[in-house]
Amino acid sequence: MTYTIKWVKLEKYAEITGDSADSVMARRKAGKWLDGKQCKIVDGRLWINLAAVEKWAEQW
Image (cartoon, one colour):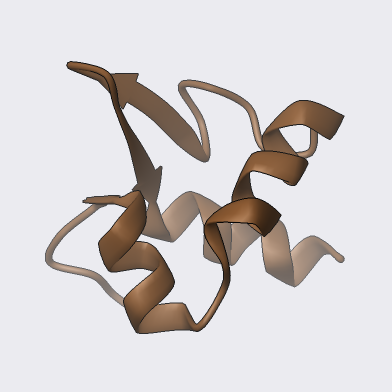
């Protein structure tokens, strides 16, 4: 799938995927999602890289 928007805020990610914010935070804490790759903090808000997350999911 091709995305026109690469990064979305956590709330939008949860809305479009059905994933929960708690699950995202757990993946970050466990080191499954890396800051700067699948996610990053900008101005105190967590952003998610849709393409990187899809690639990560395909590897599982």
